[in-house]
Image 1: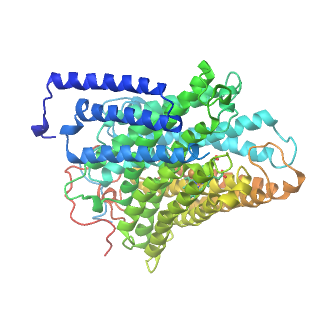
Image 2: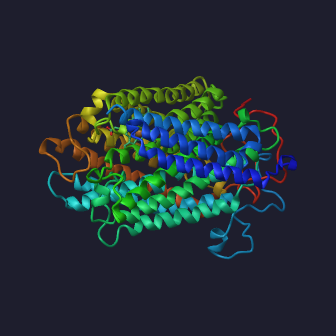
Image 3: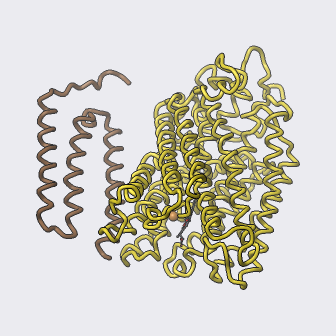
Length: 94
Length: 537
Ligand code: HEM
Ligand SMILES: [Cu+2]
């Protein structure tokens, strides 16, 4: 590929994201103390999803990549989300 | 045969080009996509033979009620290993690994796949996985869970469950890497002018398949690891006694395994979409509709897994959602059938052997697909689930679909691959015997299922005896046909009449415009594509 897409991310950004990820990890542990009943999985997945979004965008450079790859990644995440939602048509209504 | 002849000066085919290696190393160290394809072909033939023998043993056991040649435990082990071999070692990798590897780069005008070394590695992983599966036959006794490894039995049984499940896990990596390789190859290596909508349909189906391999396979990997966790560490993901949920296992298993049936059938549909226009000498009808239905099948196929669990105790909401979605997925499949038939309509058809396989594919695929709808409907499935009917459904569609397409493909591309020709009349004799045997073997199972014969038992009530005799006789006929077909092909690959004809069937894809057998890097010069494929006249 052409070398126009070389984007250099400063270390400070990486540090910031790392901190954010740790905070979110802490949150997902803390949140288990609250009785969310059937929403607990949704909340856990939401937090985990946010974390992976940051990893994908910054650490894996998706944010600076071609649009087509961003579209692909989003579509795949939507696919996975639909599979999980459909699974819960069973668990939530059983 | 002058301009159609590739016999010329100084060109060396991939079969003569040995990369300076000797003996078996010419094969197992080569990164040429064509040699790797043949490595897969030969290894699969070995496992297929084992699988067929196990299948025959089951049919012999079922020729009469009571114990005939084996007891219940052996029978359970036989259907498990038969299923694991046929599904994970043959039909999932089958068409992509053999014909995809061989034809995909050629069809898009590339010299090889995007990652040739990774391609060879995938084959090694395949071999490792298959050895693990075979190892499960020794030791504590072969696994007896069925190829579906359902929990909780799979973490409780004392038999050799782990090697088989680990084998399936390892094979998954081979599948993922092949899918990845194909996706990247199609995105990055198309020849100039080979736009998306000029791509041959077989390549298109490999593209759809590649995405399923890439995205669905990790799920079965994780699931099998979870079973291992339950078995070895007693974690209890699927153990109700520990707050786990056995139904979760079924969800996870089918979230992969239903899309996996499209890994099997999509490339088969691709092969048929190649053979039909070539032998009808007519442009394929509705090229775009076929492409879009391929993508639609790949996509909707992700959302129907629950139809395997209609009687497992899911919520009512899940039941009807899955049933509706299942009916939706039949639409794109039917579109393809209409397109094939319309292609043949008013074409000038030549009934050469690849065409016969393709036509019979349509026949068995229709029966398989329509009976899929019978079990896809909630009410009828309650009656038919876990009966011989389901076994008939998926053999019609997996063996009838993928198997017929595989035989069609090998007879179609054989001269190109080996530079030799098989005996055409023996090929036809084998086909008709096989076809008659096939229908006689699996047809009665629909009836047996409807009158209530359950699947996966070594014994049955007297009232089921008659159709079972017919079925076993069908198996013997089918195997006779199979022996003829395989002997004919093996003989031809070794001593068949040599041919250098570039385009024996009058096809329009790029593989028919390069020498027979192809040179090492397929093309001297990367071609520039101007005309869409499937244009006759
Ligand atoms: C029109 C399309 C199809 C529909 C509506 C359909 C529907 C179904 C349903 C509802 C079942 C579960 C029946 C039961 O267990 O009670 C089933 C089983 C099965 N189907 Fe299909 N199917 C279709 C196409 C296919 C294709 C294309 C394949 C493979 C290439 C396939 C392979 C299988 C297999 C392997 C099983 C049995 C799994 C097992 O329990 O061991 N089906 N199908
Ligand atoms: Cu299914």
